Length: 205
Image (cartoon, rainbow, N blue to C red; front, side):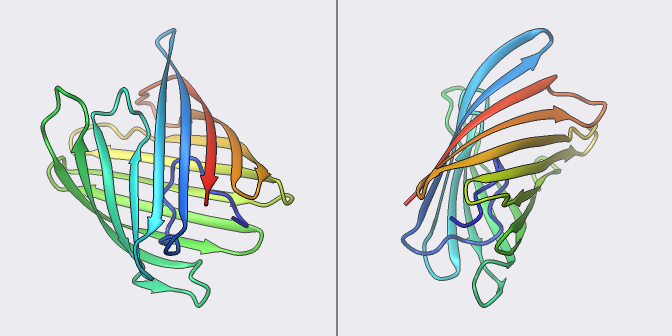
């Protein structure tokens, strides 16, 4: 865990076999003068030398689907920390009033050094004719402090894009635990919310 994870962006390369990373999030959203809370999770691990697994729902109460994604490291550096990974994803219904399952395809990339890491993810839903993606930059100021910047994008046929930006800091408590706080704001005219405050605990083992 030399460089910590971003808030929401998928890691561009699969984790090592036997390594597990869990991000637990608390989200406070301000919308039309009201604030409401939600929680999220993102579990990732390596299934083989080149195949990774992600299970994620960033808004458990408000998002009726949980994603299960399989990622393949098609191109990678010798240390396995930089490269290109196509993936397939299933959106599984997890609310009682939602019965629909659908699939997505996409790719992710990662470039990492000892003091800086870039991750990118872009996915397409054929059924919704929609694109979703994110791009993150994580720096290493010291052994414990890591500034994070992320860009989140969403676009669909016939709809105005809804993009946002996150700025925050993550602090390494110990080898296996990181605490993060972030602030997310829309950067397009179409706004799903006014702003969000993010609290996150990262656990790795």
